[in-house]
Amino acid sequence: MAGGEEAALPEMMAGRAIAEIYPSIARNPGEVLLWTEGLRAWRVHGVDLDVRAGEVLGVAGLVGSGKSRSFRALMGLLPVQAVG
Image (cartoon, one colour):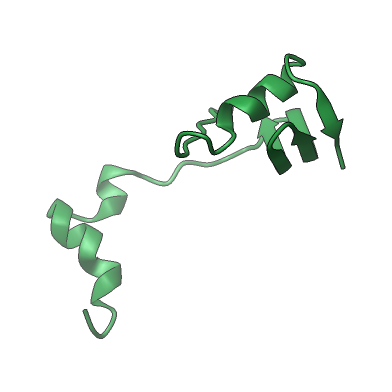
């Protein structure tokens, strides 16, 4: 695609302006409830995470990417090697 048509592609696919489907919502981030920097556990290296009140966290990745291990370490179910 040329000449900025890429930016218009979602609207062309939906048949209307994306702002009509997903209006802008004022965001007031709450306090940080869960955070880690540089989390290291078995086969997990350098996880940074910051979750605030009112947020919904979703984590996706391939099998073996460390999703489950990261959260086991955060919950204290897997020994943590280092943080920070």
